Image 1 (cartoon, rainbow, N blue to C red):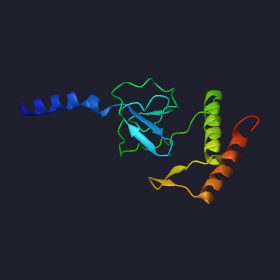
Image 2 (image 1 turned 90 degrees about the vertical axis):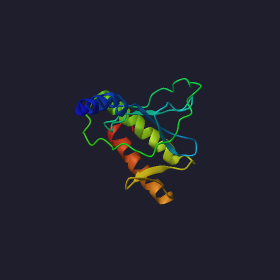
Image 3 (image 1 turned 45 degrees about the vertical axis):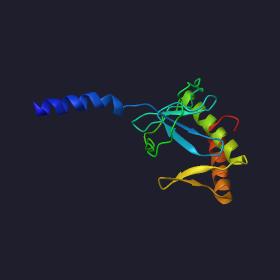
Image 4 (image 1 turned 60 degrees about the vertical axis):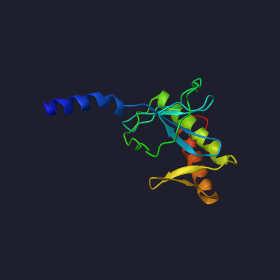
Length: 143
């Protein structure tokens, strides 16, 4: 009887483990993770529990109770190769262009290094810009 109660409790808790998470960066460069969508007008990514990240989604309208809190847990990056299709190539080019614009901008840039978010300095910023531009020229038509 006791095992049946434990099994029932585990089955009832299972949907809670598969919750949706959102990732976005605020104007100060701080990366936020939350189970509620970010404020209205903010670009964000939906993070799945498998560690994969969906492409940027359009901002959803804010609900009155969308005071999102930052969570400390960060998903692992997927190491699976991506198929070279026109759609994936376009996503890559958009991502590279966004990264180049961000790196050339005046705001702070935070990157994950050794599992921790760190503000990059001017030399690292230049190195990342050079790498992103080289990748853009290699993979994007007219780049």
